[in-house]
Image 1 (cartoon, one colour):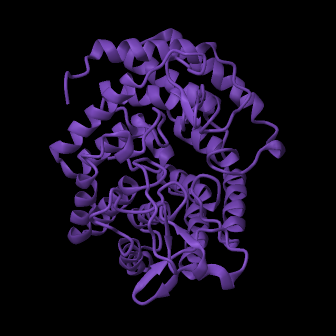
Image 2: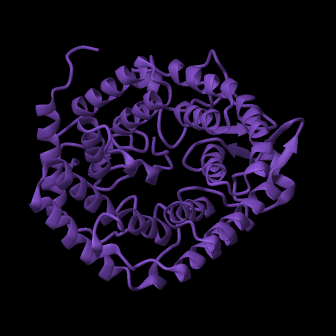
Length: 403
């Protein structure tokens, strides 16, 4: 793996990201691409480095965010791009600083629940932009306050998910293709990526199990759902799983290493299932899937082209840390180090970069990005986590458990 990363290297990069984010003026206030990412980074930077200036900047930015949030009618609802994600951010920050206290109430919770049910009833279970993000927000609220009305709202969503589950030959799945015609379900590809597909649904249902919400009913179906996903595993393939499972035509499509799609998200969902429901067989399968990814280092083998969290080097570094926390396997720590080092090596100070990092858009097309999902806020938080491994609870925004 070559020379190890030094803390001085990482600190230098973190300071560069801080300075860049503090100069950026955000028009976008969505969770994944907008101002919340900058606030989150500056808040945790202030915590880690005892930097009053960064803390003050995050608080000033928070005041601006709250003032812009008053016009709810102009917001989309999605977790990644709209209201639900911003509410989730407020919930996360509400016990960290007084600026966010009192912003959330049962009327907003019910508003999100209505959105969740509308999307679920249309077959849109997507975590990032569909009903799944609403479920995530309600679970976060329930974890913090344990209100019975929140449990009831979550239960309504779970009932729709279980009712929509399709069982075929001892396996079970959801059609994630925003169903328009019920007769086309079996001809559509099924999304098995973590950000938009079945593993993301499973992760939320496992949170329900942990909170004893519809626990027995959920546990009855999860093994069948995992057996559906595992049908599409190709152990000898470069990627073990495709982006999509095609019931009629099978699969032959490569899936890169990433948070949004691919082998690692599936392995994390299997490990979570094994840990939460005491399913040792599935825990071991999840670990073995993840171990098989450890040698996918080249661009050809990994498909990794940039440094963002969603499908880049920094997100891989964070996820391998999650895998290590689940399993204790030293190979995952080596992979965390490897992809952190690659994040540094991929830096490029051209006109398309921000703080030395740029987002891949298309062949020969790059652009600066500042947010959590693809930009320097998410990259910077991953570097902060590298220095202070316990500073990892922000991974909840990516549907990754607090371990």
